[in-house]
Amino acid sequence: MMQAGSYPLHDSLLFKGGLSIAILALGWVSLPSVLCCMDFYLCLRFFREPLQSHYTVLLVVAVSLCTLIMQPGRSLAKQLMHARVSLAVQILMRWAVLLFVLLLIGFVTRSTLQFPRRVLMTWGASTPILIICATCAVQSWLRQLTQSANHQRRVLIVGCNETSLRLAKHIRSNPALCMRITGFFDDRSLDRLGEPDVSLLGNLASLADYVRRSAVDTIFVALPIQDVQRVTNLIESLRDTTASVYYVPDLFAYDLIQAKTGDVGGIPVVAICETPMHGLPRVSKRIFDVVVASLLTVACLPLVAAIGILIKISSPGPIIFAQRRYGLDGREIQVYKFRTMTVIEDGDQVRQATRNDKRVTGIGQILRRFSLDELPQLINVIKGQMSLVGPRPHAVAHNEMYRKLIKGYMVRHKVLPGITGLAQIRGFRGETRDIAQMKGRVDYDLEYLRHWSIRLDLVILASTACRLFTDRNAY
Image (cartoon, rainbow, N blue to C red; front, top):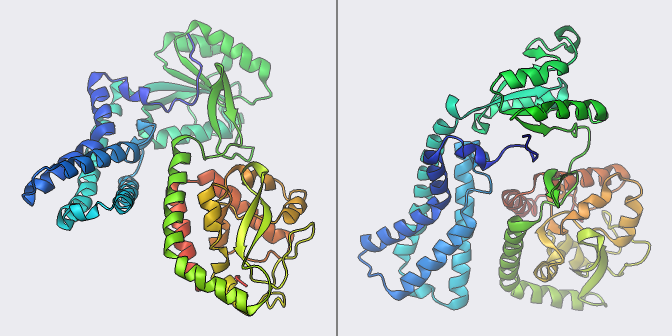
């Protein structure tokens, strides 16, 4: 029987070889938690510290966080394809988040003084090294097991076109997929295809007989989506085989945003444009936003008070003003800012600040130069209306204008707006003098949606901090 489903990059591929791979793969999942617990105990023994109740509580919390944060990911097959450097960086970043959460819990509960620094620092430094070494060792072992000839699936690709060639290249360059391409089937000859490196095994009419005679595990059908009848006939002819059949629609012609496959009530669907913020990644980003925004708010209270006094004595008007902007899913929100101008604009016409703008106050120039006017938006982040990193929200008036002029403009609202974003560190901070500049900003916003990760957020935050003193577009 044919199997319906999504692209077969599943952990089930890892279990094809038998129980040994299954046990090893499951061990890889639990490895960080086991090493975290073991190393903590070893540190206590090394410094001759008795295992008292407060250590037990810390260990339980640490292992729980480790189980939540340090997991290798949903798909072990994808993890097998990670380069070791990338895997090590990923582990270090997740461990840093875990330590940050532990320190925050200790700060809130005022329990940090109960633990000797030498124990915590040794444990905090040695555990990620152990996890990296053990993970890389298990990864190598899993690769050897899964990539042996006995564990590989024989693959046929139907249709020779840009999509199928791209798929074939991906399969060949990723041995961890456990697939070996046997050849192509197409109604055109090699001369017409113009692809001398393609192993053409026959035409579509001969496919079913070949599959019945050969040990074929998987068939990718990559025919053009408009050839509905031909695809239907082909799939019907394969019903008498045991091969898994996957249809590969030619989606590369579309501008995909977080494309994914899934099902609705058992009906397979392909997401063409989707938010990356769902499930555990969304929870992780929200926790990160709340924790960092809360700490920054507390740390900046003296600075906020000083800025408020300077604004009040330098010009008449409120210290903070709220402007209507579009947030997640295009819903209207109130974004807070320190007042830097002698006017407050929030109507159908909002004029952007320009260089040497006479509306900007003296203290406002300094605040805008170093983006200190954005500090009140930490409250928006804590309230869940904004994120630390995301597409910058625009005034409602600007949104209504540019959504008619720039294709895909409103897609940027598939995630929470941010205090900073990818566009800002790529040179699109401040005034957008023409539609080309706004389009450039939107293009980077969409790129952020396509490639979002916690790691990318950290890179953007670090780059923003470095650019605060060098960016000439802030005024």
